[in-house]
Amino acid sequence: MTAAARLEDETDPGGRVFFSGADRSLIEEDEIQLTSVGVDIGSSTSHLLFSRITLERMDTRYIVAAREVLSASDILLTPYLAGDEIDAQALGAFIDRAYAEAGIARGEIDTGALILTGVAARRRNARAIGEVLAEEAGRFVALSAGDSLETLMAAHGSGARALSDTGGPVINVDMGGGTTKVALCQAGEIVARTALDVGARLLAFDAEGRISRLEPFGRHHLARAGLQANPGDPLPQTARAKLADAMAEQVMQVLSGGVAEGLMRLDPLPWAPEAPRIVVSGGVSEYLDHADATGDDLGPELARALSARIAARGWARLPARQGIRATVVGASQYTVQVSGSTIFLDPQDVLPLRNLAVIAPHLVLGDEIDAGDVARAVAAARARMDLGDAPVAVAIPWQGSASYARLSALAKGLVAGLRAQLDAGHPLVLVTDGDVGGLLGMQARSAESVPGAVVSIDGIALSEFDFIDIGAVIRATGAAPVVIKSLLFPTE
Image 1 (cartoon, rainbow, N blue to C red):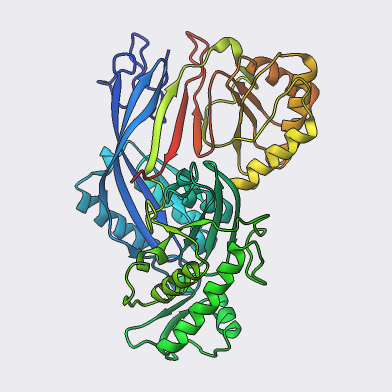
Image 2 (image 1 turned 60 degrees about the horizontal axis):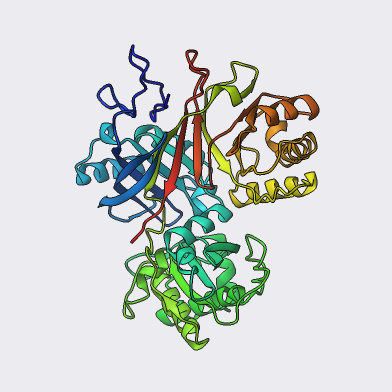
């Protein structure tokens, strides 16, 4: 039996489970189309992207076969109230307009993703805004992306990760309104990342060229450039260029493996290639090919300063797949059948669980498994996704024999790596692609200190940028319906 891709389980008297309504059966459909929306609320700008996602059935699951952008909203300067609060009412009105202009009703949205990024994710009411907009704008995965996760997302959305498959390393420089994110990509993988407080809207200007917005790090950069200015003061074009040059120089230092003192948001790159290819994304990238552009922030000046420095180093600059829209298209959904005989649940009523972020630690499960290595891999995966002590599901690529020694070491390492989640009262949720779900769950419960619930299922392959729902067990079969929502990125 397959599972409903809606958040509710929908069955008919005959026991079939439907995808999105009483007239659609997973068992009978080989292809399903979804309408999805991605919403990006950043420190500088916000926008929506509506897409049609085509899923094709492969055995008991659906995979993404095609995606088509239906409508892209205007770019909105993220509105703020007095102080640090984002204007939720203004954002709500913007979303209403975007739906109307796209000709799509909220009820037509099958799935989606809402991402809070940059400085916006750190505003006092950011979480409340995310929850309100996710509830109003459709069936969303809602995520507040910290520096690490935003860096990973930008490298996927800009195409930098894919470009590194051939031709050597690629560095993605995602320069937004408040921060600059740097991802080092090699052989199709993101191998290192960092971020620093350099952004175009750390200073903003009114129509007369006077400073209308000055963030704390804007003051920092002014001082570093030997300039003095306050809100209400004019900042001549020569001063803007000097300020942007100083900021771009800090970025170039980081791209070369150095440190920008007082500006680093993540650890510096552990190494830097001698002649990387560069992909620039984010709001600043929109000005790269417009030498005479002007704006109400430092975007044009930063684009010119960064481009000149890249050229002076002799580094190749590759076009980004997406610039300011290097964000998620939305979320796809597909279902997976789970065998009840391999599920471990304790207590039995722990399900359902909703919208669990998936972490995919890089595990090497040889003949002998080292619990310490497992714990460190889990901790690194949590850090990549900026999840803190939020509830998660761990994707485990199982291989080899299910001996007591191997299962014991794996369980011990998983519990140690997830201690923050377990101490916060969240369940231990383990998802393997091999047939050891029940055994691993029993081992974790019997031998490890897990204060809360334990859920262990198998037969499912997951990856980073997935979110899962695990429904209540279907009594007739003993199977637990699982819905997997994968964040999707632009492909062109």
